[in-house]
Length: 535
Image (tube, rainbow, N blue to C red; front, side):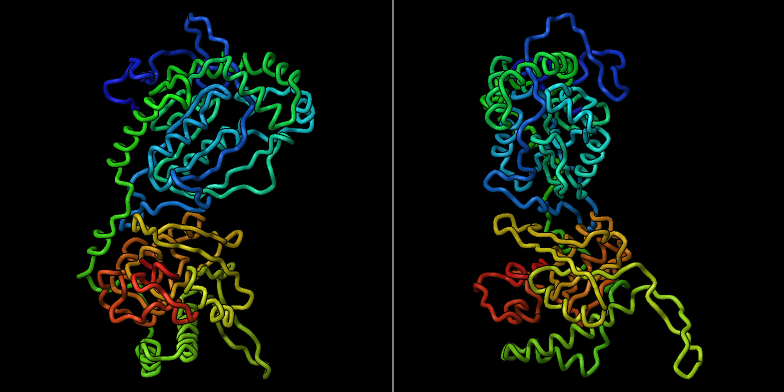
């Protein structure tokens, strides 16, 4: 239980801090639901709502981030250092939960926050229920209207840093849209809804519980304005739904859960004293959990150890060394750079394919003789390139793998935090069943490669089915990836020993993307900042 120290049971500076579970009760009408408690106090007149407009799923204090974004709070072992910090926001409809959530996000000023709305998890209605909803005769405020199983599973995966698919609910048709949104976990997850505290399994996932308490008259006015102006409903229908379903459901299922809150925020988003207190507590929790990328620790780890057994380096034949001589030469023109890079890529991809599983297959030759050969033993091979430079390896893969599927990942370094961030993701469907060739042209510290592997694992690709291929790697990057993911096979044409203070590989190859595409990088930007941030 995460109650704030020194605040339990007291109203301080405009907010109430209550010890969760301060009053008991028997089993409720649904097994998993918390009990409806009669405290002997007359319930205040309130309103709730079936829902509100869906908020953005992923935001920062300054700008909206791609919903595929997420922070790399994984340690050098490739595992999650700590679970995300989950804030549960409960309260009646139009109480200001979303406003409170947004103000918390702004005041937190941390790079990654997920805002998850309970409204996304309304159950799919039957035809009969659709008809009732059209005439305001369906109870959207009852716990049975929500898919708690899907909600709990989704929030649990999100807290573990896994990717999840969020249903998109369309309130005009009272149903889910065809396309779902893919979202990743973050350092802070804010989950809000009218019944956020009503399910026992859901409560176990909440690290901090906040109840937003706003006067019932204010909430009713907000509800009327929203449903009439935004959802095209008439005042008679809104009042009918309120009297028949909204008010009774609030008094039975929502208001009693206020006793479970660690913090009660009167007046909603206007109570900045309460919001500041909440933010201070969350900051202290994040500091304890250390949800940050420790590049210094990553850089110093395992430098003195021998290269791992999962690494395969192309034989340093005169042919391979000759091609390296050409592409490493700063005076090589772009045409020759591209030509010899492609030759190396073809050799690299061919070598990588030799690590795919195979089985014996006997065929008959044109002379009528049996030949015992080999054939690929697996469902599919998929290539995934880390943009931009990794994309240059796709033609070599397509040349040797017929009908290969291609996915793309864009990871770039945040210039303020120095941390890699996922900005774009496109993966083929059912990739979890495939052998994946992850392509990046240069890997220095390995941070972007590690993050890309985590993305694949979050999409249920098996670690032993991932092959990381790169033209050039630094020893630091090899050790980092191999230590984090010991079952990932690493294939490269060469390994350089050093990385300088700017995380450039030494002696290196230069900015591969700029040399290949003929673009110019600013003098103070590294290879990884520009295109293939293997930083």
